[in-house]
Image 1 (cartoon, rainbow, N blue to C red):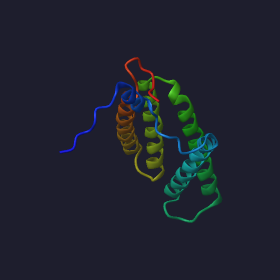
Image 2: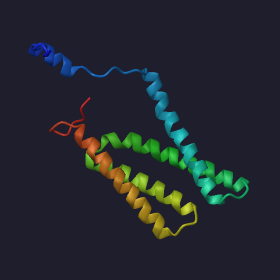
Image 3: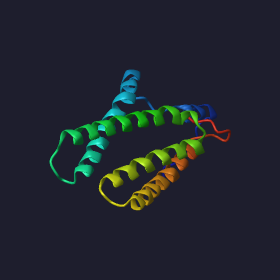
Length: 149
């Protein structure tokens, strides 16, 4: 039976301090900070406009509504991405809860369902995101609350 050879403390320390390689350049990350919210905003705006027209014809007002919705969503998503890392993990997770809950509730309200159903579904989706994000931020911090990596 094969066994792993014991490693020295120096080798073990080097292995634990190594970070995963960054595949993309700094320019790519900077562009992604702009284009990811824009792309997601366009998808969200199209979805909201499609919900609002109920399968009817596309009108100018429907296009305007979709683009305004996309703009608002993209700006808010970029704000959450910029503001979130400056907050503590509980506040950061709560920020994502509010953002996703409101976004989901708004989409559901555009489909013609009741406001109460939109609220409950937004709260349910937001609560799921809150749990996931809190777990993620909690497991990516050291004992003093500083982010790892």
